[in-house]
Amino acid sequence: MKKNYKELINERYNRRLIKYGDDIRTLASGNIERRNIRYKILFELGLANNTRVLELGCGFGDFNGYLCSKGIKVNYVGYDINPNLIDIAKEKYPNAKFEVKDIQEETFPNFDYIVSSSSFNLMLEEGENYTFLENILKTCFSHSYRGVAVDFLTSYCDYKLPKAFHYEPEKVLRISKKITKRVCLRHDYPLFEFCVYLYPDFKGWQKRK
Image 1 (cartoon, rainbow, N blue to C red):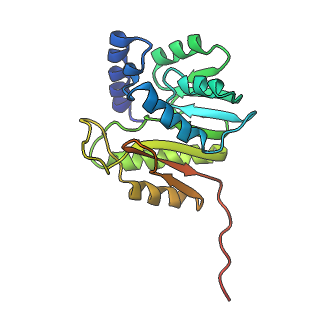
Image 2 (spheres, rainbow, N blue to C red):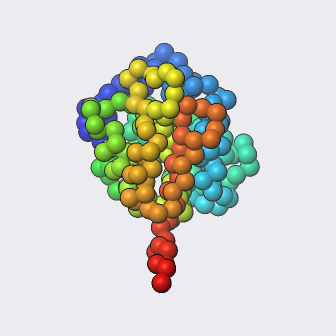
Image 3 (cartoon, rainbow, N blue to C red):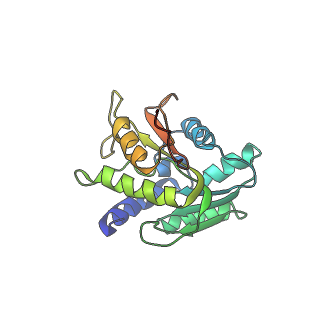
């Protein structure tokens, strides 16, 4: 991630953190009910007990709390580029592992599943959101054994948030299909958002004789 993007993102979260503290308003991701809908969709990627799960852009690590509340016991790891959010996550969930890490610049191990929610919706310079997204999806896919799930604001909405980027699902699908043949795009849940699942590739269909 470019240094100026990272600084911009951290500055935005730090301002809200001073104002709201450990509160969903700091993450600007709607209310808890909406967040739990997103978490349910991420979980439906296929997460199961005793799997290794990385949450990218973990914020306060509350997806770990959601899984625990559902009785799902995974080996959870959370990465975020904001050290202040990571400090709070470590206090809230001492049994999970959290790190300040930029996966585009630093090495990291493989996981069974990699998920991310509301992490890539900031509008970047013109034309850069899709380039950035493709790099993120490729990196996540190359480090996951079983699947990747990432959600986005959709362009199919009647109001677009200022300074936010609303992705065209068709473009995200095309990017995803360049990475793997096994893609599922979820646009069926009651938010102006969608989620894409990327699963391990297969050799392909046999040609008819």
